[in-house]
Image 1 (cartoon, each protein chain N blue to C red):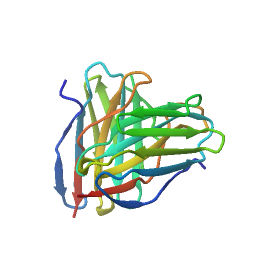
Image 2 (image 1 turned 90 degrees about the horizontal axis):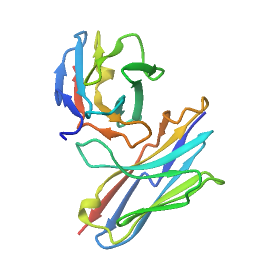
Image 3 (image 1 turned 180 degrees about the vertical axis):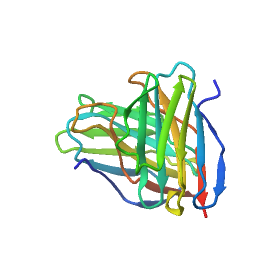
Length: 112
Length: 115
């Protein structure tokens, strides 16, 4: 298995632009998580899906952030419009039932 | 408020030495506690998971302990190797709604192993 796949690995954009991060979870996993990691705040859970349904989005910072999971093998995290304070590494993770979460390699986002 | 505090913030040791990382939490109700290792530029990888009834669990040279009464956990690394250089993150799941999926993350301990 290739593990959790995220794209792009690096993204540099200008303030105000729309950014879309993509994630392909491990096949067979039924839960998917989006995290943000910064030096100041560490790892933060943004949103979590179970069986493609958003369960807890209390970590989503504001309306500029949205996440979708149209099917079991794909999820997106969109930021529109992006701001410099959104610069961070965004991780996607997946798991099956109560098992361990497996993290992807992350997308490093820089908003200028 | 659910919190996970880790100490020390950073640690430098010589190769071959042992070290212990600490994690204190206030998450309630408690479901489980995990230790993750995060290499630079990579996503976290799970080392151990402990539930309420477990007080020690080993994974090779890594041994985690849990005291659910005092809400403390430790990660002991034996005979450290250069490859142990990483950030170690303590994550406690549980929370006000009782959902085991709600994780609270510590800020991590940055470990550097020198030859």
